[in-house]
Image (cartoon, rainbow, N blue to C red; front, side, top):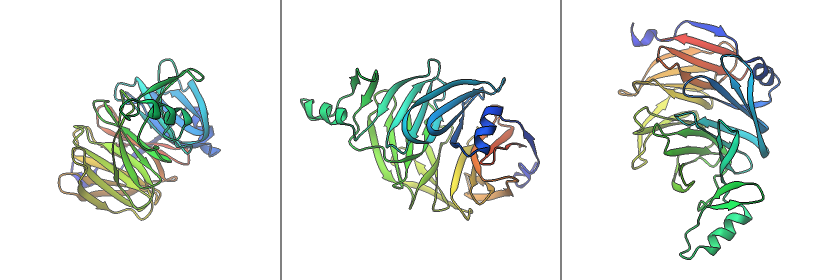
Length: 297
């Protein structure tokens, strides 16, 4: 099969009923598949719902945010779920116990107190007994996070924010590793390559960029969408990068040549989530309208 013939046919499948209802009511602002495909997380106004894909039942509901949850990502081993909100916090949840295990909150009073009490002036993590949460102490607030992605080894979490910046976080400690400017506008989508050597980002500026994760320099720039880029995913071999936009189109890029090799419309609404199946033979798309589309590779 030629690369230009990829994903031309699709079938429509069913989402968990509770998730589909929330999507239809526009209660969901972000969705993430677990890497093994067994769960789907959906974030909305101060809550996160986790569904079992086999049964369609709701597995857990996570709460505690004061504003809308805008970004979600599962760790590669499914053990953690990262979430970002308009309240300028980035949190990690244990997916088995549904308990929050780490909070990044750069503008909290506790964080400021911990930083001030550090002997060498370096902020230290601390336990908040009032909430039973561990708070890390980054040098700056995460900002209004709009996208998240774990590195393949699970050691690093990338976040994209409304200020156009991309930040790298150390998962074990919550330490902010680096910050760099990614887009002129919102960073709405992130995806690490399977080898972790590069990071793709999509923004409200309609562009897709590919970054070197070692020195954060720009490798490639992909132009093709006419509206915000809201979803990204790599094929398992790392040869293809797929982007979904609010222009209701999916673009398939050849990473080696930067060429656009396929483009096709989304039947119902913009892409909210894109992911390849575990065997890399199918591309799965969830739309803002609540459709689950599966295309053969």
